[in-house]
Amino acid sequence: MRETIKTVNLKPVDEYTPKMKKVLASREKFEVELELEESPDTAWATMFRDELIKSSPPGYLQNSSKDPHLNDKSITFFTSISQIENDGKRIAKLVDSVNEQVKQENKKIEEETKKEKGAEAEDEAIIRQMRDVLKKII
View (cartoon, helix red, strand yellow):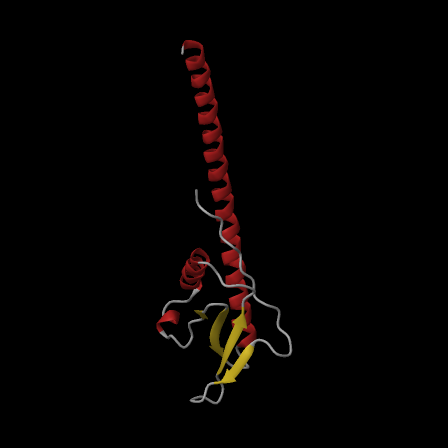
């Protein structure tokens, strides 16, 4: 029986978050670290990476400075004042898309679990019937 996957959300932005720092080698680039409400599990992280690859334009991920990085409890990316809105929306959309995939996968897991439990209950009923038959004989 497979375990369900946790959804992971971005923490709301306030005066202190997300963490931002200027990239020393550039006048315009900043490193932005959007915090997550909790650490994603391996399945969520894999789905995030797959969705990132699927949704990126050709060649985008070949430049690792553009590639958002999923950390333990955050997503880090590089941007500028002119790109922050687009990049922020892209990350939020990625997280939402992954969470939607997680919900769909969890529905499948729930259905599988119900089937397994139903089969176990059926097996238990058969075992009870077999014991009843044996009680009469032995």
